[in-house]
Length: 271
Image (cartoon, rainbow, N blue to C red; front, side, top):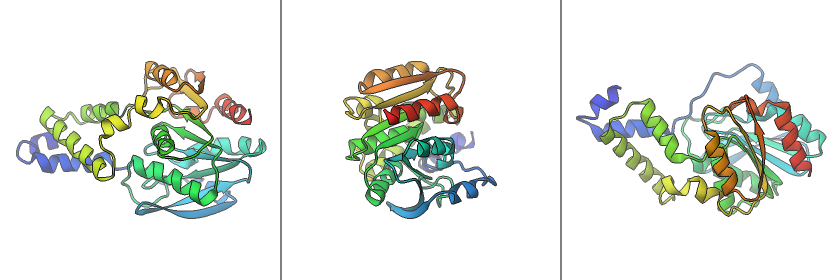
């Protein structure tokens, strides 16, 4: 990696480049059906989240289910849930977090995710349940820890290993140890400026799930290529107020399209 070589003479500059990349969202080009999906909503409001603005879309008027996507994801990933939930009498909210999907920009971080949930609660009223996928689960649990009064929680293929995310990024870019150490320090300092004392501890599973006090449903797949089954089992042990729905062969993203998973989530919410 070129940055490894450059870091031999300009390590702070190289670490700054890596830090910016770490908080950069990967966006794909717009798909033809996306605009029609958002236009099918009954209502759209633009909400302020920190220094960003995001469009938030609502369907239905029943107890409100809010969907929280993962890193480089989109609210459109939950489109298959909407009709079953409306038929069951729920209202639904989907959105793209700051820097994601149709929302402006390409930079984001966990506090923007959790801040989106707080802004939705303030604008739309009580939240019956947050349904969160992947990195979004970390943000949803942090928001609840910070006072978000969602009555229930559904976590699908949740990602809580913030140190593992760092290690994956380090290995992917083949960082030499000194550069990795400087990059990690810069990332931690950025989060401290946002009010997080130590993100490598604050966003860890035991801190977020232990004694959470919010009942919920944990959904995961045995063949998730991004998160080991042993990690999901640890999450279930930590989250004592949860039930588990386990699948096989769906992976990390296709799980959001599976009819049995959608039915299990709807059944949990109806109960």
